[in-house]
Amino acid sequence: METGPDSLFVTLLLLLHSSHSESEKFEVLGPTDVIAAVAGDDIILPCYLKPNISAEDMTVDWLNLDFLDGRVYRYQNHRIIRDDQIPSYIGRTSLFKEELWRGNTSLKLTRVQGTDEGRYKCFIKAKSWYDDFTIQVLIKAVGSKPVVSIEGHREGGMGLLCESEGWHPQPELLWLDSEGVHLSAGPPETHRDFKGFYTVKQHVIVQETDTNRFTCRVQQSRINEKIETEVHLPSELFDYATPLRMAFIVLCCLGGVTVIGLSLAICCIHNKKGNGEMI
Ligand SMILES: *[C@@H]1O[C@H](CO)[C@@H](O)[C@H](O)[C@H]1NC(C)=O
Ligand SMILES: *[C@@H]1O[C@H](CO)[C@@H](O)[C@H](O)[C@H]1NC(C)=O
Image (tube, rainbow, N blue to C red):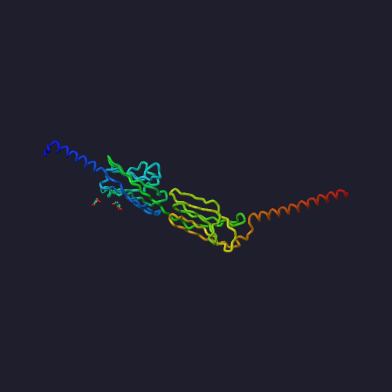
């Protein structure tokens, strides 16, 4: 077998070429399990290259797929690119710079909040190759103990309001009597603040019962959390005249006074007339 210098050169070239394109190829990997975080915590969203080649010269993009515009983070040309960063992530994101050379492009996210829940894409681009990996992040926040306030007499019963704030995901609010029976209440009111945490409140009108104990329960089954507040209303509260009854009594009194006044006036006029006739 003869191997000329030309064919050797071509073989070398081919080897060089293939080794070059091989070095550009990589896979982007991360955890397949959901990342569950508690609001306020600092978390790491793992992402890395396989093989563990350096990502220092690559573009690393972190995206939250629930946001159509903007990015969570971008590293490009050895710099952090802050243009188009989603406002809620400003000042809370970083890469581990000292880990980039071995293909670790994990993102650190500090003080997680409700709006951080979602699917994150770690997208890595080299000159002639790119790949990505998507991670699911869940945010859990247990809200405040429900606060029950007494609103006074309403429609023949007692009006109560229950309120609890700081939840994620959105919780459910229930009013229960002392037997645990669901009371029908007003429409639930939900508010989401700019950090993505939920406040729930609901009005209810309760009638006097044997125990006069009522419970407001706020629960979130996905994170398996519930908090309740029980109130005991003294039965004297129910005894006071309702505003409607008060109004009725006042109207009756006024009516009585008017009738008496009118009859007195008629009497006077009648008497005067009688007196006139006498003269
Ligand atoms: C890269 O991965 C290889 C095996 O997969 C490991 O032996 C080596 O320590 C890793 N290098 C770095 C810098 O992490
Ligand atoms: C990447 O770096 C972070 C921070 O040092 C570390 O917690 C994580 O385990 C690293 N991941 C890999 C795949 O080396």
